[in-house]
Image (cartoon, rainbow, N blue to C red; front, side, top):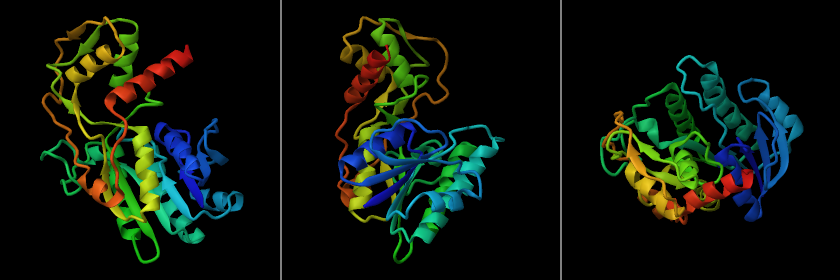
Length: 297
């Protein structure tokens, strides 16, 4: 079975490529720039923000039975045109490609924060949406496109991800910063009281959810998150403990604009329909990030 994977070089895309390859899929990746990615049989370089993209892909790649659309501009600048070109037009183009290929299943990666600030606990797929940025608005637009495209003969799945963690976590994220400082026994500094709770889902679990979406022939919208959320203070304590660090934990005295916000995400629907049960804990994600710091020297 052939799977076309956009955004193959991103943190989430790399985990998906490795997992699908291990499951026996032939994975054809696409990204703006070529990089070595484990699990790809082919790698196609293209920019999703161009109307010529579909024709370029059709000429270079044989039809695929399934598509996983993970590519996105991550910009949060309201006036950045790549948000509309890559995330909105790009998703339309990939759906057009799916129609031309007669692809039977497509999985689209969205984001839990399209809801804005949580208004209920836990956060379910029925939570009202209020995207806080142009980026989140573009992800929501993609969800609507998938909903429209979900028709007889074509199954469209949208996966709303919480905060991706584990292998490949960008160095500027709070989790990677805590790991780096804990490894060096440097202070871990926390905004406010450290009460804001975030849900960190390991990218290996995200990849498992994608695989389940393809295998279960699912359709519709699903939250994909870790089983438990963790506060910033708890996160710092866990990093220190897991890495046997002597780092002190310090409160910076600066306010956290999201003090007390709880990102407790329900995955009951994904458990029911996809048999999705996260395997990797926050400690597993911390160790994976630490191992990458060790490897990078």
